[in-house]
Image (cartoon, rainbow, N blue to C red; front, side, top):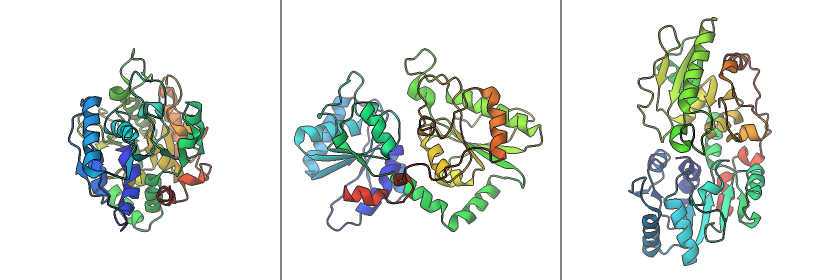
Length: 360
């Protein structure tokens, strides 16, 4: 879904290019992303456990059918159609452009489980990346500089345009009424991620030191503590598109704890409606940070490098000890958390990502 969100504003524009014959294929959650943003697409119906050899055959069939001059892909944490078609374009001599959407798992997006070399056989002709910070990190991980092109993040362009619009003020008020937010009540939105599914339980080599349930229970307890100190808050949990919508349906904080609503409404609107945005390493935190909203990254007992760019770049210290979370929330209430102040790269804030992609 993240890869699709980055591609959608770009593909929407390409649809109207008279000189282009564009066909868009979408797998799993990307179909919903494209549909919401008006991008016509053809579903790629395959299960998650489709073998890479099968995906390679699908990719060869698509190239044989369309005989494309250019293939454009996103990337995903899961190996699948993107990796397969990139490799088939290398073998068939077809130009390929890949658009990156986040500052995580750079090598993992292009390499299969037993591979270690970023050879010409596994990389596209060009990788469109978000900013110079991503370039620096990718160079350190062995990516060839000649393949990396800074374009920005098209999903951020769309989000910031929405944030600056007049219509959003009415939509925010409407959503707050819909959620039952009372005057003087603080809306805290937690953007979940399937951490357990992606990185495994304790003992796994990729275990992060926490999972989404550790965070949601810790957050609920912190909000309850503040509520008893006359700081009323409403917690809304937004499941990730890769999580079942009913995942938190039975979540209860117990008597006397803050009211919890589990919503699957538009992520951008919910982000702009929140008074405080909380997550782990979701790119939603970066988007909220760009608007100057209070942002809290909760990663208790984090193992290894912070997966969130805001932490690695020195803008936001993650909460690693849940004991401190009530005070961090209180600081957010008092506007004592860092704001963006346009310190991130201009490529993320100038609204020109789609134009740079078209030029590329």
